[in-house]
Image (cartoon, rainbow, N blue to C red; front, side, top):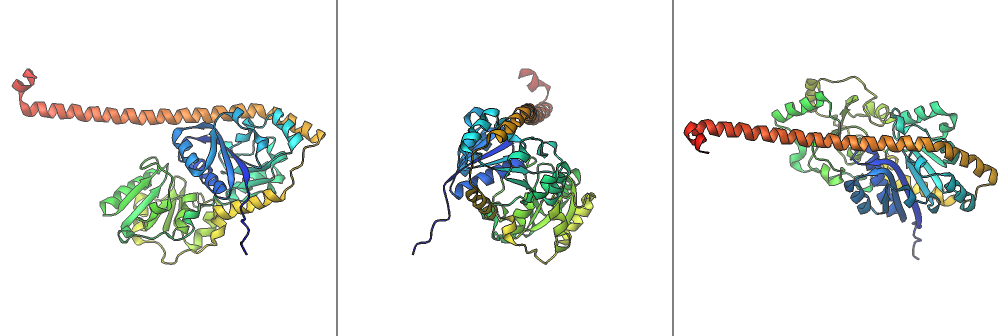
Length: 396
């Protein structure tokens, strides 16, 4: 007898603030798109600002629509709506509430990815009224949400789950024993200096991030490295891939991840804030050369599995009956949607400004590189002129 297919067709909208870099929220958006599509979803993605690289990555992950135009999105046409960074304030208007009064609201998931970044706070008045599930990426973030309202006591901690490819050990090539991968967009000075010191001592230390290669980390990228230095979600990727993890970045960190510090680090999303004291470059080098604990950390893989969390979400979506809003309820939500209009404007302006700041920063780096090249060329011309002598220079 043929087994029934557990996949069911559904439509999903992911709304986020920006898609202009390979930072945490962008990576989450791409990976969630990929998993929703893999489980049978027709996925659309909205963000206030999107660049070409992130658009292509989302389309490759299975998104059928990627847009920054709110008029191209009809919220009520989706079965499930996932929002982060208060992005839904741009999409839920009084007109959308009118549609919910006729067709019922979709299943709403509101996610919060930080305990201290203002744009990750529960700013929307509609969130507490519409949320079927509120997600926090760590115990630390959940505690921060509870400071806003006791309703957030029911928030679910979903600890930045990782894609399917990282759910089994990744083979290590032999020459990878003295190879390290730093994954960071914000390498602190002490780690940058430690990297140079390690390179001088014969280690290979590569960087994935703004100071190295910019790309989404993939399982096969870890094959050449025995050790990963990073924080956040990359820690979980490296952990499940069977790599030694040195948890350290711009917030500091405990260093080698061990059984003794694992739970404390996990509660703060492996951000390094569990150990806010900073190490010196020499201490980092000594730690690396001494090596990690020989005892490998074993965890229940389903805790960090994107596949498992999406399956659980879809069970809840399919189990909930979609009922039209009553008149009184719709009137209340319509008023809240109108009040959220100002927040929408602030959010859009904030992310748009950040996008332009990044572009200006990139342009500044390009100008700096061009200046350095021009200076090198000028020095070369002067050197050649001195070697050639005054007679040759005067004839040129």
